[in-house]
Image (cartoon, rainbow over all chains, first blue to last red; front, top):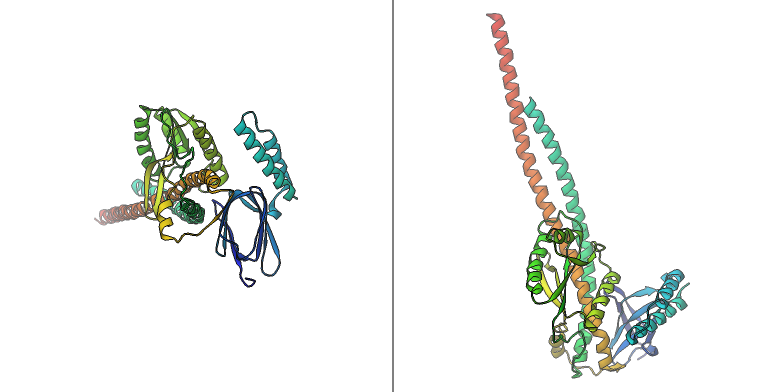
Length: 132
Length: 292
């Protein structure tokens, strides 16, 4: 198992952002963090918002902000489908603050609206923790 | 003399036009390549989505989602028309607007239909036809962004789920191949089927997936995602087709200008020749008169 590698593919509706081998992944699912190592059993899951950390064979790390979506693990291939994948280095504090401001200003009178609002605030907070 | 000069003037104008159309053709070609690349890259997402849908359907789940269900009473409809912002692209806009208008007439009788339009060309046309446009977009150029399309898609999803919208039609130019584009009117909502759900599932061998949180909840999320991807694809197709149409139109214009230059220079040469001939005969005539 040790010599096996994962192949991580991140696709957004606009383009394939990332397609490289990796030795370990950590990212948020809808209810908390999940870690994936080579040899993971097949999985389809709903993603949350937050940081995706990719460790490759030489030990160096890459990090992205992922914006909801789905993950599919099938053999060695891990596909991440998300609306946006932004390299963490490109997440700007001003953008994140603006997103939070917008999210808090959303109406939350009906049940559906409140759920949307809570989700947007959660997303903006996660974005803010990564921003610099 | 006067005639030759007039021809020279026209010749210059036509040559200028040819330069411009030639440049526009090159620009359209470059943009088409870029738009095409974007469209192929976007296809990866749609493919993955339908793959997951296929995996889900293998779990014998019944597909129930508000977006998949047709409403019992059809009262409100939206027709979205995708046209271009700029002209000089041949029959591109006309080809979309013709079937769109036919569909609009057809639906107007049975539904409370509102028309939405993207692109300045379509907007002016609809204004001329005195068709009320409820929502208009002019921010889509040759590179439609997912963020912008997502905003529109979210509005449709909300309207549909809350029952304020019963049917969504979209008129756009479908990209089939580099040499074939077709103007079509499609019904996006309710979603008839989730694409390649059945076809790919049967060929692949079943993998026993672990679903987090559950197949049903994933389905709930994936249906809107599939809808968004589909709408986004329409916008991308329209953008690619527009560039192709423009390239073809500009190519024809350049060729026509070339033909015109040829015939004009021939005319000019003839005019010049006859002018020289008449001058010569005048001189000879004058000299002969002096000798006599």
